[in-house]
Amino acid sequence: MILPIYAFGQPVLRKSTEEITENTEELQALINDMFETMYESNGIGLAAPQIGKSLRLFIVDGSDIEDIKPTGFKEVFINPQIEDEFGNKWEFEEGCLSIPDIRANVTRHSELTINYLDREFKQHTKKFDGMAARIIQHEYDHIEGILFTDRIAPLKRSMLKRRLESISKGRVNIDYKMKFPNR
Ligand code: ZN
Image 1 (cartoon, rainbow, N blue to C red):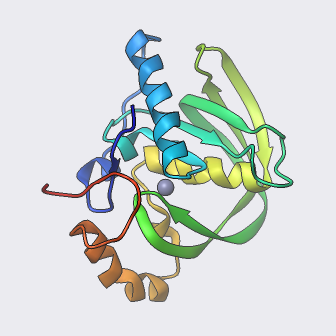
Image 2: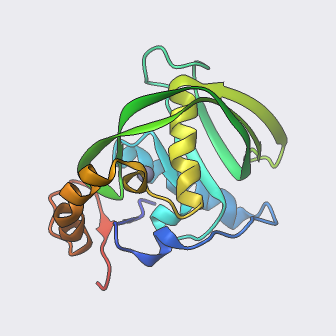
């Protein structure tokens, strides 16, 4: 089932998320719906708050990205915890399904270690770098109530203020389902 993506301005994007305690049929169905929703909107990552669920859960699929390591980078992260971020800081232009038509440079560390459960509730501790780390950092921010626009230079952010307000009022052209505040 394709779910609407919650737009900038929706309070759920700012809430602190809850740990998932049980591997249920509902959880598996939710993960399937999240993949379907992400593919429909051509995303490479999607976090639970973006579909209105305040849970520590996000999914990624960067398997179509050229040169991404590991190849076939498709994963479910349940109750993830970034243990450490390190390596050089690098800048990259990010976008977000909850903030359509806005892209801006964000500086992040190039490497990280993360603990998480996969969709079978198997525990992993893995190291990621480059684009894989970048996608994880962006999605991890979502479950911490942080958006990439919080991390851009203040001047750029003030330049984007009106466009962000327009998105929160539903004034945006998109070809996927969205849920705007107060609607
Ligand atoms: Zn995002």
